[in-house]
Image (cartoon, rainbow, N blue to C red; front, side, top):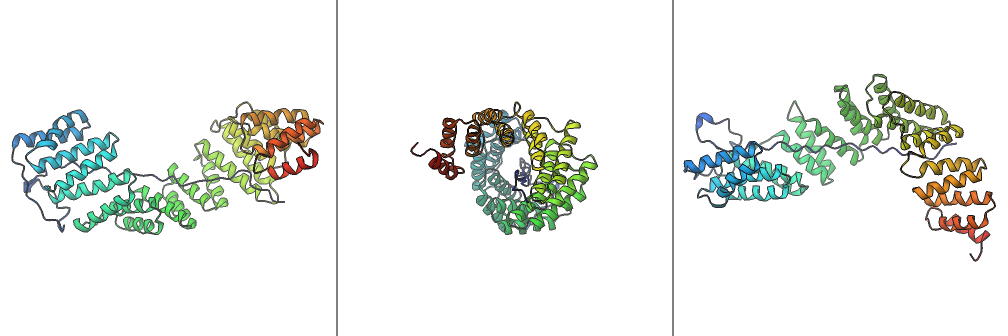
Length: 431
């Protein structure tokens, strides 16, 4: 017979939100042709304004303040830039001082404050196109960091429309925004556009692409990308974990097992979670099989291998998992031994209840009752079922009062209320 799942393995793709580094603060915004790099926005629709910065003293203070901001000296930056932002005659100096203060706010964790200052800087308007559009793109990044995804999307689209610049990172930024807005087809299109524009795409873009495929019901596509990424980077543990997670999310459990076993044979499984997930995969496969013993034996072997290598800790959770593997494999004696080891180590009462269930099945009512009560007191997820077993232990001990009390507790749980009330109606009418 097929076994109902005992442990479900839920593996989500770890999505990395990478905020691109802020553009260099345009301290000089130099107008000396010899110092200028090739124009980034030669076709911008915005009219290039004239600078109004003429005071050498003000220019030096601005430069020193921006240098301090770039160096992470927030106190010096604020001391130099705040007076310029508040009262400089030059609107250009005010704009750049506000930008420097915005970066100080951002680096100090005040993203909303940074957004406010950067918007004021842009609204000021007296900046070259090179500086203006770099700061507008930075604002889109700030909005993303502040989880204002539609604002980020609107800003980067405005930046592209007015700046007339095509840049791979900007489409990746859009893809991230679309993903967060749960517009997965648009996210996929944006990320693929970004990847098509460079021969060195950021690895985090693939994570957004995989997650978008998975969320839109295209798990096979997500798994394919993950496997390709791992094949290209076989020594990268993150690529391995992403590939395994994508396969599991696509419910390609045999493929995930095969990949993990290959990695284990090569010594690439380094973390406890890797061994635990592999054991859980084997356990899931066992529960779905008419003959669970071969896969439960493999699950046990994986855990014992991890324990012998010092990777898997013999804690309550792992000992409980080992007991579950033995139990599904129809080895109750070994399961009971594992549960007993788990009981003093566990944070909850699950191992106690699992051990009590085995003892109850063996008609060892007194010990079963003790363990079941211990588990209930410590806390279990399915309290109603635990009380039902406790009632049965009391019945075995011919403790009618105890059985009724336990059944009344079971009747309070939606999962067991029907059975418990039916028993009470038949065996304890009027109580």
